[in-house]
Length: 345
Ligand code: ADE
Ligand code: ZN
Image 1 (tube, rainbow, N blue to C red):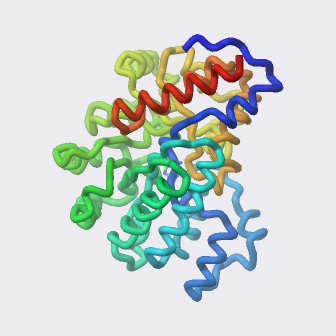
Image 2 (image 1 turned 180 degrees about the horizontal axis):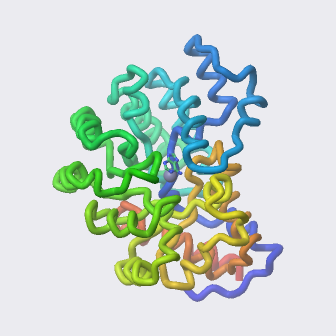
């Protein structure tokens, strides 16, 4: 769609009301400190932090691993199917308020089986919340299980086996956790198996890791989207490949800022990615930890980079086109997106 310019003072309302899909968020990263304390109390647990404020104060990171360590502490309060349900319901209610009409939610089971839980408890709680949110908010949601890349490929195979009885509740497979030192090719065999089983495939690559990890995710794992991918900017041939093959990047600007991937949002490369014809999208990654949900990512990124209404439309259109919904659903969302932009003429 050819979008007319919108004045800077009207852009926040345009972004807020714009229908959008969120394709990169870790459900455990939506656990707000208040909910962490509620769940700890419900499960009779004592946290290492005395209160919500002191936990929030600990959210200062200089790299991905700093965050993963504290994120792991938060996951320990999840003990029952209802806990997973409540966490997911809270996220979907919040996403709905940001006019997210479709969400593809990352989760992992390995964190929780490591705490003695059954993987099926995790999947059933998440899935039930997704089903209920469709009725309650009219939002669609699907689930992508991430393998933890700091663990072995054999452990990924085990995690896969544990959820296969619930195959129909999971749309795709991803790869998350500590990137450096754990290149995608470490998981080539298990991704090949997932592909044969009909799962859609994505992987985190090029968040902190080099462009070579993005090449490997594409060529060895055969993923359809790259999560983050911002380091691709350092490899011209890779940029061309991403644009040519319409490989979407699920970019998370506030995450990149909080994890010091960029020194400031003004230095973020998402505008340059769009200019290069890359199918970039905006996402929140771990919104409870990184300072905002998806609309806050849009708002701050547009303010810092001076992006246009045309680019807002492009980012939202990309989010639908890169999602794992049917073509008919994509069409329906894209029509609503165009109608929203018509109202801003
Ligand atoms: N798990 C949760 N958030 C993540 C991120 N930004 N990168 C890798 N793994 C993650
Ligand atoms: Zn992520």
